[in-house]
Length: 229
Image (cartoon, rainbow, N blue to C red; front, side):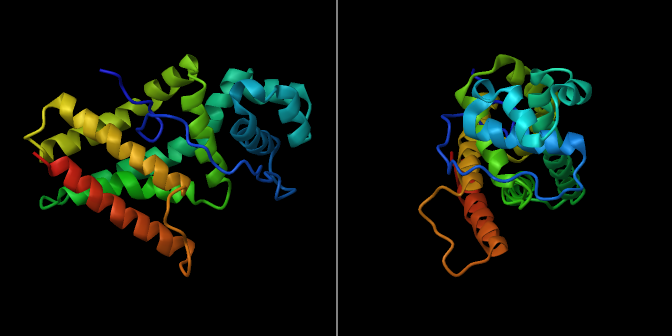
């Protein structure tokens, strides 16, 4: 069967998001490497991996091409590193949360879902470029970059397998294929929540309250779908 792209554990059509380009250079103290990554992320979000050139990246980061070559070696490696710096944090937190959950013999399906969902929503709402990174995730689907997909699968696939195993142990009525179908659908809903592109608006709620509400509703919905016979 078709496997998910190893990003947030999701696949599906690209999500159309606000095209506002976030200003990456909010501090003059950012390192050269940080400035290049921030500029690349913002430009890839707006123009795509093919559409954004290294010349545009260097102009936005106020560096020369030699600096990009020194830190990353190639545009392909730069793209990989844009994902690595956020997904390493995301997957590390997911695995930490999963370990804490599994250390409790009485853990339930909702606990595992929270370990999967909450860190992703936190990354998406990070003030330091989280919204831009969600747009970059959407681009990964739209452009069908096989080298990028291989990089993501090789580096982050094992984390998703650990979660699949944790879900499978709590859902013995589901065979592997059915489990993966349901996890793909749930992950698509998570992407939608990360994008904050739904019907629910944030009237009268803070960022944290909105994230907590998103998490609560998504976990309740996902648990019902996974438990269905």
